Image (cartoon, rainbow, N blue to C red; front, side):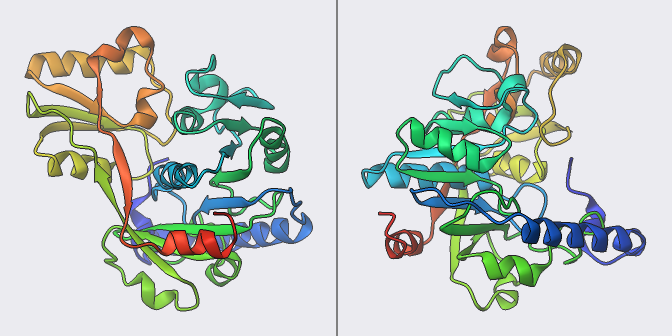
Length: 319
């Protein structure tokens, strides 16, 4: 889903939904308590979040995998394959699976390192170990109790912060803030800290980073963009920062699978307005091969402000 606007502050809608939020938070706490995590024999790094919606977990996971590879490690990702139909499979770069089979994010992750897919993260870790992993990166799964995490990095969008600090569906919190922070190793703030997150998180190391677009070749500056992610506005702002003129933008639910009709409407609009079409890498993997040539992707990367993440990995004896 797209992040609801009423999650930004405490308002009438949020207050009416608060009893449901308390129930959600209690259910999460109970699940964490009743299902003790199982350990594997290799280090596990969880890239998670305390809030629902897009925070930048997947590009962070990719960046950390590349960092581990530079240090001679052989990381594998584990994923539940959200939205996919297959489980118990290993996805490699240019593998035979599509987004409807394994989900959209695993296809992106697999361009950097293999992805073990199973709804039970412990079983996914066993698959990864069987195929030669010497460390594991979980893209999401901070609230999943099945696999023990050696390092848990909470990713927070600096622009949105913690919203109204209420639990889903009343607000964006996936669980009680104090409980979540007690299990975390560090907090990664992506972008400018516009809501003073640091003042709310005083007991953990703070890592700062920026999402940087990989500057594309700009021919036609007039573009139409679309995205099925938690916070599409961040993507549109990145396009503007690159110098594009955004003529129109189409928002879709997170993890949305596009119909032929939806894509053809966007293609027709672009032709009529003389514009290029841009989307995210997460959306591009769900476009049929015969239509891909109509679309372009704005690639992004995470740039850490300092070497704190390396220090954390060294202290945990992962590198």
